[in-house]
Length: 413
Image (cartoon, rainbow, N blue to C red; front, side, top):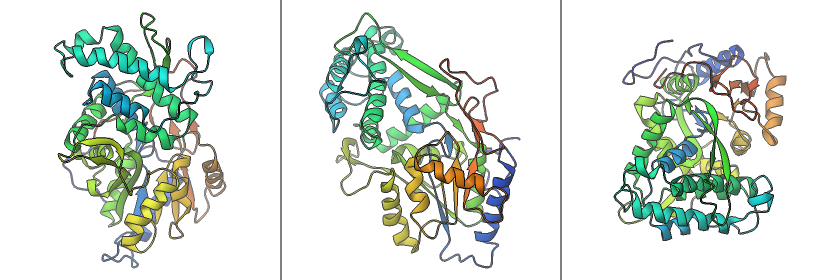
């Protein structure tokens, strides 16, 4: 289908076919008719609302992680080496990482040697790169061993922390790396990262640190998923909900400034007001620059913290929970089942595990029934898009298959 211009008004409530599963599409359209402003039950003074996760729900892949890759590749940091080391060590245990993240010769590896190597390489970059305190262009810097060592080991450390300990450590740790940036700078960085990713192939990539610079941690490798895509079906659903008078809110485990940009910027086609994004919050200094410190009094917007955040900011305002919730992982499970007012849960199928698997089984059992409580939408990870079924097509095996399909639309659908 042709893309709608970014400046176009919010579309009518009917959903475009795109790649929706046909039952999901019919149920979502029924949901719009039942709860939207054409329904006799609609009260414009107390409009219903929905809450949507963002990463791997509204987009394919993770915007925060894509922003990290762009930040690393372009050395977009506003910390000196001492400040960076403080951020890297914040709240992270010094106990060994799990065996999936070994050191040289398969020996256990922990935080300290990796951080020492990162800071050592960053110190060289800080003194030499024109984007930091030096005078050498990035094109030169990218060919130097400290550059490859730095970007690889930071990305390795993020994976090791999350896999070994918990995302309650790795998610805040990731956004601490934005310290020193203001909100406007973070939003500009997000735009650049998203625009770059939309032109990249959908594939797995691997970085390996240089053998000429083993440091204390040794030569390390890390793989990550590349090729973030906007999802036309979710762009369309967002606009249809709002056209029907239903408030659309986002509750994300990413940094609030990052998701506010992609959710609200008309160029990306979701048209969700920035003020309706709830996400991770950090402290700011007197000029508005971010501190590597979680904001006092706020919950991490993951798992139970999502439900607590919804209670604090939305239930207190509306008097009840959301009528629909959408998500893709166990981090969304709590907000899918904690609110009696919720009539529908939409799950994006990306091989869920744990508690979310039970809801997926329920969606399968309720398929083609009159009033399902859970919908399961299929996704193709190889091509970065929805598929018209409940199923999941996983990434290629160890080689990481790039998408053979043309690049999906990079603007509003």
